[in-house]
Length: 266
Image: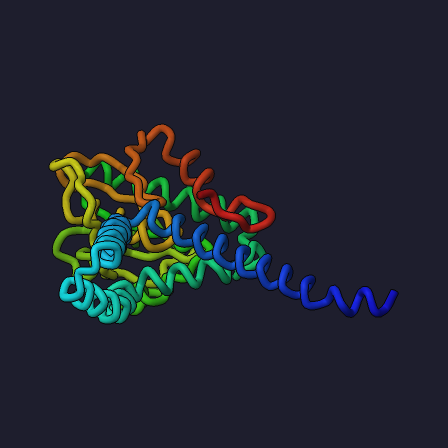
């Protein structure tokens, strides 16, 4: 019996290695597709890679030596270029792979979240009616520290008066985004990479920035248009118009303040 098991060990080990290999490929494909799905830059990259691979296959079949050498050079240096150019996206992909549902830094009490929600709704409503342009981003499970570092540290509780003052035109912090973590304003005048996707002409730089940050993080961003006063949510690479009457319910649905397990809504 032992001899039979021993003789079968190489075959069993070969099967296990193949299974691990396939599993690793599927995991990488899954997270890669999730990243490509909402990011226009990575989608364009994906198309470019497909074209290069097709040309490589054609040169191999037809024996085109010179073109094949050029394609090989493109592939060799292209990998390095991709790592450099798409460093933020690669970091996001690795962060998502390492996330767990238990990564909750702080749970808000009932009083804390109701007070913070009241202040948020009041400030956004006021800025909408006054047509004050605003860009407010909420950190969910994924850290926004890199973007916090681009702005001015604030570290203050959410107050309607403070938010409306920050975005009042002419103040030092009005240009850029304000980032909120739990029930604290942690930074203002932060800057995001704008999206490269085509968006309607009525949307401006704030909307592009909001979509841009939502393409590379799991954050929620609220945009108030200074032209129309319209309020929009940006999440998962998409922009959604929000009616003021549903603002509170939408914030509750999107933020992880009200989740017992700390999961955000994606």
